[in-house]
Length: 428
Image (tube, rainbow, N blue to C red; front, top):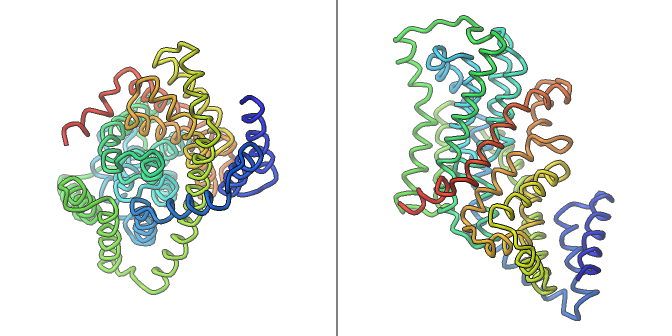
């Protein structure tokens, strides 16, 4: 088994280093494993695996949620969010810096994409905050951290992929992510307040708003609030499955674009093209991961891992801590989606053997993906912010450190109190 695992790891790393797309690298690794170590009809197994993955009805929600996010990205929604939220944050230490967190949380509820959240919120808030003299490092760090909430607050693209690969209810995953997502947003706000007070910038900006301004601002928040309510009611009332809710979201996003006067052929074309690019990338990664999982099962690797965990006599917490260290390392060299599909065939059996709920493990994985979004050299959120601001990568990475600490604290809380994840799904 040592020779088998070493060979597969070596093949996979060589392919990645050669610049081969990660989805194709996973397929090729599975083909080598089955072709060299087992006498099996690889072509038939590959064809059946690919068909089963891409024809999954649950996976259909993925391009629909992406299209919804792309449509919203091309409307005036983000500008309205800033003007709608500004009057409500001025009494907190850090004042308008909290808009990064609140706006990211709201947009996460209709997006599901960390990158889309970063780009949409950042293009408006960073410019406005800089004009008003707010601490640049806190602005950068709070945006990078808060935009990861898009993976925890439903709908979530990683949750859809995990649900398909691990055969866990996507709706249950969506519900399980709500409380951790809100806790994370609260933690980011506390960190923003603490940093603002520590650096003496808690009252920066000097904006002043009246009660009338606050009442008028509600109108700007109305469209996104209506869309969030539409999705929540559709999902949690049983009226719509995740796929049907995604379709409702697309219809709602197109309606908002029409109301704001931003719906045009060029807008639709740009959103559709971007959706095809992103969906194709995720479909290739998911298909490669699904086939690699099948190959691992034929090769007996999950059984070997379960036996290894059993023989090691690690406690359930010990198993999770080992995996956390592994994922923190992988987050420095792989993107979050790839981390799920590459490791899941090995780590999921070990987690189940250790007594953890697969639903809880899905949220655990999502939080590790959020960490991967912030860890150089592959931290995707850092690159998005650099593209918006042209700031040096080192400065952006440095500004993220306190918010990365909040993610670590959330992870510790989830391990210590698993019911934070499991309680709400058990009630619905």
